[in-house]
Image (cartoon, rainbow, N blue to C red; front, top):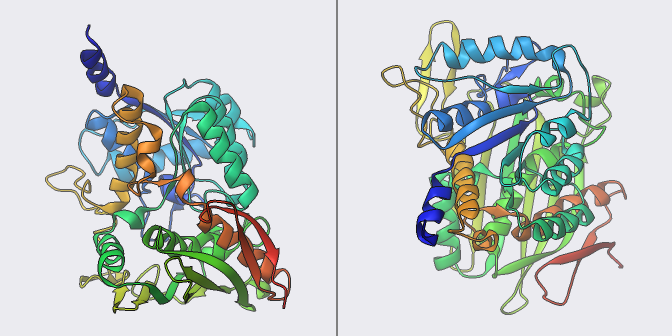
Length: 429
């Protein structure tokens, strides 16, 4: 077989995928039933089963901590996927065994996969680093939900490990495949000049505090969970144009405390950005909350962006489509994110950006395995690769440090390239 033929054969190879995490985004299963959100059928598992149906994925594994949940998860997936869509093979190896509780089950799961396989990690924020490192050491390509990690130190370690093993490591940020956000990014970069100002808001209803009670305020907060979305949008948009230099955190409290949860209700990060061409300054304000009331959408999401030559408003939550149905609350729906309604009995959400985010990563991993692409080819903004998302981690960590220091601003320190953060220090007045 010639070299080109060998590469084509490898590219035809299907990806084996290990999903680490069994919660809302992976399966839609929360508290023994379908999640009370816009993701009742989940996203990750549904997408992997559909990619298998379409010939891109072969073996699928799923790993959690509590194996006692798996009978319920299997029933849930059969009801919400197998019984809804035709030709969906839900075969899935699960870890740990059904009667076992094991926080380190991911080590056993990873051991059953091979170099070149894929791991997709959707677990509590403070677990991302250890799980990702174990997968990288095995030679797996890795996608981690946002935030990829919580500290700059861990992020830099991931970059080094990925380089040593020559594997693709990326953060899952589906907003990069949202046509509204993608067009806003391209307009800002090509037409709107230097960065001036941005305000972004993202919320979830207060019943989500129950969904996340195992970790909320203990190992992470609402800023890591939600502000990470629009902070990534800024880093992606302003790459080569501006860099964050200072972060100040403020918060609101009361609702979570009344439920016995020691965490903030809302967190606002004010970030000073510096335009690279002339050292002029811009300001971004990122606010996230998980104490919003129930409304016509599960999550309010919007931003305003202003450059020296123009401005953009995006309301991600309201796309112009509303649904009223007997027995259900009035809702503004967004099938651009996930289209769950089947077409002629088939899953037809392949054009949704919630699916595209994963499919593009699977395609990239297969291309790297085939030798058609290199890992570094994806540092061009086409994926949220580990090497191009360092500023976002620095902002989030600096915001947490500021909150823990009574709102003292934190300066982001850069290395010789002037682009990659290497440290965070308290601002000296």
